[in-house]
Image 1 (tube, rainbow, N blue to C red):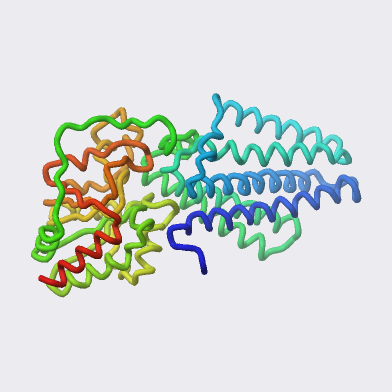
Image 2: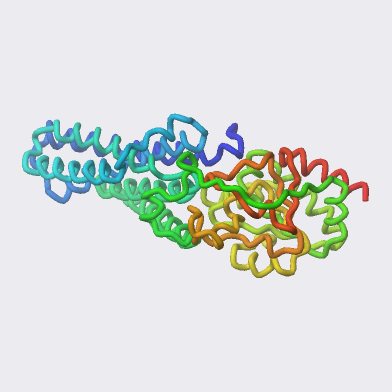
Amino acid sequence: KNVQMTSMPQMVSIFNGLGGLSAVFLSFIELYKISVLVGEISFAYQITLIFSLFIGSIAFTGSMLAFAKLDGYKWSEKLTLPFQHIINIILLLFTILLSYFYFLNSSDFNYILVILVISLVYGVFFVAPIGGADMPVVISLLNSFTGITAALTGIIFSNNVMLLGGILVGAAGTILTVLMCEAMNRSLLNVIIGGFSSSGKSSIKEHEGDIKEISDSDFAVQLFYSSNVIFVPGYGLAVAQAQKLCKEIQEILEKNDVEVKYAIHPVAGRMPGHMNVLLAEADVDYSKLIELDEANQNFKSTDITIVVGANDVVNPDAIDDKESPLFGMPILKVWESNNVVILKRSMNPGYAGVQNPLFFKDNSKMYFGDAKESLQRLSSELKNL
Protein backbone atom coordinates (compact mmCIF):
# COMPACT_ATOMS: atom_id res chain seq x y z
CA LYS A 1 0.00 0.00 0.00
CA ASN A 2 2.83 2.39 0.81
CA VAL A 3 4.84 1.73 -2.35
CA GLN A 4 4.70 4.59 -4.86
CA MET A 5 3.27 3.78 -8.29
CA THR A 6 6.67 4.59 -9.83
CA SER A 7 8.22 1.85 -7.70
CA MET A 8 5.66 -0.80 -8.61
CA PRO A 9 8.04 -2.64 -11.01
CA GLN A 10 10.62 -2.90 -8.22
CA MET A 11 7.99 -4.30 -5.85
CA VAL A 12 6.88 -6.83 -8.46
CA SER A 13 10.51 -7.93 -8.85
CA ILE A 14 10.92 -8.40 -5.09
CA PHE A 15 7.69 -10.37 -4.75
CA ASN A 16 8.67 -12.50 -7.71
CA GLY A 17 12.12 -13.14 -6.23
CA LEU A 18 10.64 -14.17 -2.89
CA GLY A 19 8.45 -16.69 -4.68
CA GLY A 20 11.56 -18.22 -6.22
CA LEU A 21 13.32 -18.20 -2.84
CA SER A 22 10.41 -20.10 -1.29
CA ALA A 23 10.85 -22.86 -3.87
CA VAL A 24 14.59 -22.89 -3.16
CA PHE A 25 13.99 -23.41 0.57
CA LEU A 26 11.46 -26.20 0.02
CA SER A 27 13.62 -28.01 -2.52
CA PHE A 28 16.72 -27.61 -0.37
CA ILE A 29 14.98 -29.12 2.68
CA GLU A 30 13.68 -32.06 0.67
CA LEU A 31 17.12 -32.72 -0.80
CA TYR A 32 18.62 -32.56 2.69
CA LYS A 33 16.08 -35.14 3.87
CA ILE A 34 16.97 -37.41 0.97
CA SER A 35 20.74 -37.13 1.44
CA VAL A 36 20.99 -37.12 5.22
CA LEU A 37 17.82 -38.68 6.60
CA VAL A 38 16.06 -40.87 4.05
CA GLY A 39 18.66 -42.15 1.64
CA GLU A 40 17.44 -43.75 -1.58
CA ILE A 41 14.63 -42.06 -3.48
CA SER A 42 13.30 -42.24 -7.05
CA PHE A 43 15.40 -40.70 -9.83
CA ALA A 44 12.45 -38.66 -11.17
CA TYR A 45 11.86 -37.16 -7.72
CA GLN A 46 15.48 -36.08 -7.47
CA ILE A 47 15.43 -34.49 -10.92
CA THR A 48 12.31 -32.52 -9.99
CA LEU A 49 13.96 -31.26 -6.80
CA ILE A 50 17.20 -30.25 -8.52
CA PHE A 51 15.33 -28.48 -11.30
CA SER A 52 13.12 -26.64 -8.79
CA LEU A 53 16.22 -25.59 -6.82
CA PHE A 54 17.97 -24.34 -9.96
CA ILE A 55 15.05 -22.42 -11.50
CA GLY A 56 14.03 -20.99 -8.12
CA SER A 57 17.57 -19.71 -7.54
CA ILE A 58 17.59 -17.98 -10.93
CA ALA A 59 14.20 -16.42 -10.18
CA PHE A 60 15.44 -15.16 -6.79
CA THR A 61 18.83 -13.63 -7.58
CA GLY A 62 17.73 -12.59 -11.09
CA SER A 63 14.74 -10.73 -9.67
CA MET A 64 16.88 -9.06 -7.01
CA LEU A 65 19.27 -7.82 -9.69
CA ALA A 66 16.32 -6.67 -11.82
CA PHE A 67 15.11 -4.72 -8.77
CA ALA A 68 18.54 -3.10 -8.38
CA LYS A 69 18.64 -2.13 -12.06
CA LEU A 70 15.14 -0.68 -11.96
CA ASP A 71 15.89 1.25 -8.79
CA GLY A 72 18.97 2.83 -10.32
CA TYR A 73 21.74 1.20 -8.28
CA LYS A 74 24.92 1.94 -10.22
CA TRP A 75 26.73 -1.22 -9.08
CA SER A 76 24.06 -3.34 -10.75
CA GLU A 77 25.33 -2.20 -14.15
CA LYS A 78 28.90 -3.31 -13.44
CA LEU A 79 28.26 -7.03 -12.97
CA THR A 80 28.62 -8.01 -16.63
CA LEU A 81 31.94 -9.76 -17.23
CA PRO A 82 33.87 -10.14 -20.49
CA PHE A 83 32.58 -13.18 -22.39
CA GLN A 84 29.62 -13.23 -20.01
CA HIS A 85 27.54 -15.63 -22.11
CA ILE A 86 30.37 -18.13 -22.35
CA ILE A 87 30.71 -17.98 -18.56
CA ASN A 88 26.96 -18.57 -18.25
CA ILE A 89 27.15 -21.64 -20.48
CA ILE A 90 30.07 -23.01 -18.42
CA LEU A 91 28.12 -22.50 -15.19
CA LEU A 92 25.10 -24.23 -16.70
CA LEU A 93 27.15 -27.22 -17.86
CA PHE A 94 28.89 -27.38 -14.49
CA THR A 95 25.49 -27.49 -12.75
CA ILE A 96 24.37 -30.36 -14.98
CA LEU A 97 27.61 -32.24 -14.30
CA LEU A 98 27.32 -31.81 -10.52
CA SER A 99 23.69 -32.94 -10.69
CA TYR A 100 24.81 -36.11 -12.47
CA PHE A 101 27.40 -36.83 -9.78
CA TYR A 102 24.76 -36.23 -7.12
CA PHE A 103 22.44 -38.76 -8.78
CA LEU A 104 25.29 -41.29 -8.60
CA ASN A 105 25.85 -40.60 -4.90
CA SER A 106 22.79 -38.92 -3.35
CA SER A 107 24.15 -39.35 0.16
CA ASP A 108 26.79 -36.65 -0.48
CA PHE A 109 25.00 -33.41 0.36
CA ASN A 110 28.03 -31.29 -0.59
CA TYR A 111 26.99 -31.58 -4.23
CA ILE A 112 23.71 -29.84 -3.40
CA LEU A 113 25.49 -27.02 -1.56
CA VAL A 114 27.73 -26.35 -4.57
CA ILE A 115 24.78 -26.60 -6.99
CA LEU A 116 22.88 -24.06 -4.87
CA VAL A 117 25.76 -21.57 -4.87
CA ILE A 118 26.33 -21.91 -8.62
CA SER A 119 22.59 -21.55 -9.30
CA LEU A 120 22.40 -18.33 -7.26
CA VAL A 121 25.43 -16.91 -9.09
CA TYR A 122 23.99 -18.01 -12.43
CA GLY A 123 20.79 -16.07 -11.67
CA VAL A 124 22.84 -12.87 -11.28
CA PHE A 125 24.86 -13.45 -14.46
CA PHE A 126 21.69 -14.44 -16.34
CA VAL A 127 20.18 -10.97 -15.85
CA ALA A 128 23.43 -8.93 -15.76
CA PRO A 129 23.91 -8.47 -19.54
CA ILE A 130 20.26 -7.59 -20.17
CA GLY A 131 19.76 -3.88 -20.85
CA GLY A 132 17.37 -1.66 -18.94
CA ALA A 133 15.02 -1.17 -21.88
CA ASP A 134 14.37 -4.93 -21.87
CA MET A 135 13.31 -5.01 -18.22
CA PRO A 136 9.59 -5.58 -18.94
CA VAL A 137 10.49 -8.75 -20.84
CA VAL A 138 12.91 -9.86 -18.12
CA ILE A 139 10.34 -9.38 -15.36
CA SER A 140 7.80 -11.38 -17.34
CA LEU A 141 10.35 -14.16 -17.97
CA LEU A 142 11.39 -14.33 -14.30
CA ASN A 143 7.73 -14.42 -13.35
CA SER A 144 7.27 -17.48 -15.53
CA PHE A 145 10.30 -19.06 -13.81
CA THR A 146 8.65 -18.54 -10.42
CA GLY A 147 5.47 -20.16 -11.74
CA ILE A 148 7.47 -23.15 -12.96
CA THR A 149 9.12 -23.58 -9.55
CA ALA A 150 5.73 -23.36 -7.85
CA ALA A 151 4.39 -26.08 -10.16
CA LEU A 152 7.44 -28.27 -9.47
CA THR A 153 6.98 -27.74 -5.75
CA GLY A 154 3.36 -28.80 -6.15
CA ILE A 155 4.60 -32.04 -7.74
CA ILE A 156 7.09 -32.56 -4.91
CA PHE A 157 4.48 -32.19 -2.17
CA SER A 158 1.55 -33.66 -4.15
CA ASN A 159 -0.24 -30.34 -3.69
CA ASN A 160 -2.72 -29.78 -6.53
CA VAL A 161 -3.34 -26.13 -5.57
CA MET A 162 0.38 -25.27 -5.89
CA LEU A 163 0.61 -27.31 -9.07
CA LEU A 164 -2.36 -25.57 -10.71
CA GLY A 165 -1.32 -22.10 -9.54
CA GLY A 166 2.23 -22.64 -10.73
CA ILE A 167 1.10 -23.86 -14.14
CA LEU A 168 -1.15 -20.82 -14.58
CA VAL A 169 1.57 -18.35 -13.56
CA GLY A 170 4.26 -20.15 -15.57
CA ALA A 171 2.14 -20.44 -18.70
CA ALA A 172 0.84 -16.87 -18.49
CA GLY A 173 4.35 -15.51 -17.90
CA THR A 174 5.75 -17.49 -20.81
CA ILE A 175 2.97 -16.41 -23.19
CA LEU A 176 3.36 -12.77 -22.13
CA THR A 177 7.14 -12.97 -22.63
CA VAL A 178 6.70 -14.37 -26.15
CA LEU A 179 4.08 -11.72 -27.03
CA MET A 180 6.31 -8.90 -25.78
CA CYS A 181 9.26 -10.24 -27.79
CA GLU A 182 7.05 -10.34 -30.88
CA ALA A 183 5.96 -6.76 -30.17
CA MET A 184 9.63 -5.75 -30.13
CA ASN A 185 10.36 -7.84 -33.24
CA ARG A 186 13.13 -9.66 -31.37
CA SER A 187 13.72 -13.21 -30.25
CA LEU A 188 13.88 -14.14 -26.58
CA LEU A 189 17.48 -15.26 -27.14
CA ASN A 190 18.32 -11.79 -28.44
CA VAL A 191 16.84 -10.23 -25.30
CA ILE A 192 18.75 -12.58 -23.00
CA ILE A 193 22.01 -11.96 -24.88
CA GLY A 194 21.42 -8.28 -24.27
CA GLY A 195 20.33 -5.82 -26.91
CA PHE A 196 19.13 -2.53 -25.46
CA SER A 197 21.52 -1.38 -22.78
CA SER A 198 20.98 1.40 -20.29
CA SER A 199 24.61 1.41 -19.32
CA GLY A 200 26.58 0.15 -22.31
CA LYS A 201 28.02 2.16 -25.12
CA SER A 202 25.64 4.82 -26.21
CA SER A 203 25.04 5.42 -29.88
CA ILE A 204 24.13 9.07 -29.43
CA LYS A 205 24.79 11.00 -32.58
CA GLU A 206 24.34 14.55 -33.73
CA HIS A 207 21.23 15.41 -35.70
CA GLU A 208 21.06 18.40 -37.97
CA GLY A 209 18.41 20.97 -37.22
CA ASP A 210 17.17 22.90 -34.24
CA ILE A 211 14.56 21.98 -31.70
CA LYS A 212 11.47 24.14 -31.36
CA GLU A 213 9.79 24.85 -28.04
CA ILE A 214 6.10 25.57 -27.54
CA SER A 215 4.64 27.98 -25.00
CA ASP A 216 1.84 27.20 -22.55
CA SER A 217 -0.68 29.40 -24.34
CA ASP A 218 0.12 28.15 -27.85
CA PHE A 219 -0.07 24.54 -26.69
CA ALA A 220 -3.42 25.10 -25.00
CA VAL A 221 -4.93 26.88 -28.00
CA GLN A 222 -3.82 24.17 -30.42
CA LEU A 223 -5.30 21.47 -28.22
CA PHE A 224 -8.53 23.33 -27.56
CA TYR A 225 -9.29 23.75 -31.26
CA SER A 226 -8.19 20.29 -32.36
CA SER A 227 -10.53 17.54 -33.50
CA ASN A 228 -8.57 14.62 -32.10
CA VAL A 229 -5.63 14.19 -29.74
CA ILE A 230 -3.55 11.14 -28.79
CA PHE A 231 -1.49 10.84 -25.61
CA VAL A 232 1.56 8.55 -25.72
CA PRO A 233 2.52 7.74 -22.11
CA GLY A 234 5.97 6.49 -21.10
CA TYR A 235 8.07 5.94 -18.01
CA GLY A 236 8.42 9.71 -17.53
CA LEU A 237 4.67 9.80 -16.86
CA ALA A 238 5.15 7.25 -14.09
CA VAL A 239 8.08 9.13 -12.57
CA ALA A 240 6.14 12.41 -12.50
CA GLN A 241 2.89 10.67 -11.42
CA ALA A 242 1.07 12.82 -13.94
CA GLN A 243 -1.58 10.34 -15.07
CA LYS A 244 -4.42 12.11 -13.23
CA LEU A 245 -3.54 15.38 -14.94
CA CYS A 246 -3.75 13.59 -18.29
CA LYS A 247 -7.26 12.52 -17.33
CA GLU A 248 -8.09 16.08 -16.24
CA ILE A 249 -6.92 17.52 -19.57
CA GLN A 250 -8.81 14.75 -21.40
CA GLU A 251 -12.07 15.78 -19.66
CA ILE A 252 -11.52 19.46 -20.47
CA LEU A 253 -10.93 18.68 -24.14
CA GLU A 254 -13.86 16.29 -24.40
CA LYS A 255 -16.18 19.04 -23.16
CA ASN A 256 -15.05 20.95 -26.26
CA ASP A 257 -15.80 17.92 -28.49
CA VAL A 258 -12.16 16.92 -28.88
CA GLU A 259 -11.65 13.16 -29.23
CA VAL A 260 -8.89 11.92 -26.90
CA LYS A 261 -7.16 8.52 -26.98
CA TYR A 262 -4.07 6.94 -25.43
CA ALA A 263 -1.56 4.98 -27.55
CA ILE A 264 0.01 2.17 -25.52
CA HIS A 265 3.26 0.55 -26.63
CA PRO A 266 3.66 -3.05 -25.38
CA VAL A 267 6.98 -2.36 -23.65
CA ALA A 268 6.44 1.22 -22.47
CA GLY A 269 7.48 1.60 -18.84
CA ARG A 270 9.39 -0.88 -16.72
CA MET A 271 7.02 -3.84 -16.39
CA PRO A 272 4.33 -5.51 -18.51
CA GLY A 273 1.18 -3.38 -18.59
CA HIS A 274 2.86 -0.52 -16.69
CA MET A 275 1.03 2.23 -18.61
CA ASN A 276 -2.30 0.40 -18.37
CA VAL A 277 -1.94 0.27 -14.58
CA LEU A 278 -1.12 3.98 -14.35
CA LEU A 279 -4.05 5.05 -16.52
CA ALA A 280 -6.43 2.69 -14.73
CA GLU A 281 -5.41 4.37 -11.46
CA ALA A 282 -6.52 7.68 -12.99
CA ASP A 283 -9.87 6.12 -14.04
CA VAL A 284 -9.17 6.47 -17.75
CA ASP A 285 -11.78 4.45 -19.62
CA TYR A 286 -10.24 1.28 -21.06
CA SER A 287 -11.94 1.89 -24.42
CA LYS A 288 -9.72 4.96 -24.90
CA LEU A 289 -6.56 2.85 -24.82
CA ILE A 290 -5.40 1.77 -28.27
CA GLU A 291 -2.61 -0.66 -29.09
CA LEU A 292 0.36 -0.14 -31.37
CA ASP A 293 -1.12 -1.21 -34.72
CA GLU A 294 -4.36 0.71 -34.27
CA ALA A 295 -2.48 3.76 -33.02
CA ASN A 296 -0.21 3.81 -36.07
CA GLN A 297 -3.30 3.78 -38.30
CA ASN A 298 -4.80 6.70 -36.34
CA PHE A 299 -1.77 9.01 -36.26
CA LYS A 300 -2.20 10.14 -39.88
CA SER A 301 -5.57 11.67 -39.01
CA THR A 302 -4.52 13.04 -35.61
CA ASP A 303 -4.17 16.79 -35.08
CA ILE A 304 -1.81 16.63 -32.09
CA THR A 305 0.06 13.74 -30.48
CA ILE A 306 1.35 14.41 -26.98
CA VAL A 307 4.34 12.28 -25.97
CA VAL A 308 4.52 12.24 -22.17
CA GLY A 309 7.81 10.83 -20.96
CA ALA A 310 8.19 8.23 -23.73
CA ASN A 311 11.38 8.13 -25.77
CA ASP A 312 12.62 4.84 -27.21
CA VAL A 313 9.13 3.63 -28.23
CA VAL A 314 8.70 6.68 -30.53
CA ASN A 315 12.23 6.77 -31.97
CA PRO A 316 12.25 6.84 -35.83
CA ASP A 317 15.74 5.27 -35.83
CA ALA A 318 14.03 1.95 -35.16
CA ILE A 319 12.90 2.19 -38.79
CA ASP A 320 15.52 4.41 -40.45
CA ASP A 321 18.88 3.60 -38.89
CA LYS A 322 20.27 0.07 -39.23
CA GLU A 323 23.11 0.99 -36.87
CA SER A 324 20.72 1.81 -34.03
CA PRO A 325 20.25 -0.81 -31.28
CA LEU A 326 16.53 -0.08 -31.62
CA PHE A 327 16.44 -1.01 -35.29
CA GLY A 328 13.65 -3.45 -36.13
CA MET A 329 11.59 -2.76 -33.04
CA PRO A 330 7.99 -1.80 -33.89
CA ILE A 331 7.36 1.71 -32.63
CA LEU A 332 4.62 4.31 -32.46
CA LYS A 333 4.91 6.49 -35.59
CA VAL A 334 3.89 9.68 -33.84
CA TRP A 335 5.61 11.93 -36.43
CA GLU A 336 2.86 11.02 -38.91
CA SER A 337 0.48 13.23 -36.88
CA ASN A 338 -0.04 16.81 -38.00
CA ASN A 339 1.76 18.03 -34.88
CA VAL A 340 3.79 16.35 -32.13
CA VAL A 341 4.51 17.85 -28.72
CA ILE A 342 7.09 16.04 -26.58
CA LEU A 343 7.13 16.49 -22.82
CA LYS A 344 10.63 15.93 -21.43
CA ARG A 345 12.80 17.20 -18.64
CA SER A 346 15.79 17.64 -20.95
CA MET A 347 17.33 16.47 -24.23
CA ASN A 348 18.90 13.44 -22.55
CA PRO A 349 18.50 10.13 -24.42
CA GLY A 350 16.09 7.42 -23.36
CA TYR A 351 16.76 4.21 -21.45
CA ALA A 352 18.30 2.54 -24.49
CA GLY A 353 20.98 5.24 -24.50
CA VAL A 354 20.28 6.59 -28.00
CA GLN A 355 19.26 10.05 -29.18
CA ASN A 356 15.84 10.55 -30.74
CA PRO A 357 15.64 12.33 -34.12
CA LEU A 358 11.91 12.84 -33.52
CA PHE A 359 12.84 15.94 -31.50
CA PHE A 360 14.28 17.62 -34.62
CA LYS A 361 11.43 16.97 -37.05
CA ASP A 362 9.60 19.95 -38.56
CA ASN A 363 6.25 19.10 -36.96
CA SER A 364 7.72 18.39 -33.50
CA LYS A 365 7.91 20.81 -30.61
CA MET A 366 9.38 20.38 -27.14
CA TYR A 367 7.59 21.19 -23.90
CA PHE A 368 10.34 21.04 -21.29
CA GLY A 369 9.89 20.46 -17.59
CA ASP A 370 8.60 17.93 -15.10
CA ALA A 371 5.58 16.26 -16.71
CA LYS A 372 3.33 16.89 -13.73
CA GLU A 373 4.20 20.59 -13.51
CA SER A 374 3.97 21.01 -17.29
CA LEU A 375 0.55 19.37 -17.50
CA GLN A 376 -0.62 21.43 -14.54
CA ARG A 377 0.28 24.62 -16.41
CA LEU A 378 -1.38 23.32 -19.54
CA SER A 379 -4.54 22.44 -17.63
CA SER A 380 -4.71 25.93 -16.16
CA GLU A 381 -4.33 27.50 -19.61
CA LEU A 382 -7.10 25.30 -21.03
CA LYS A 383 -9.47 26.25 -18.22
CA ASN A 384 -8.93 29.93 -19.05
CA LEU A 385 -9.91 29.54 -22.71
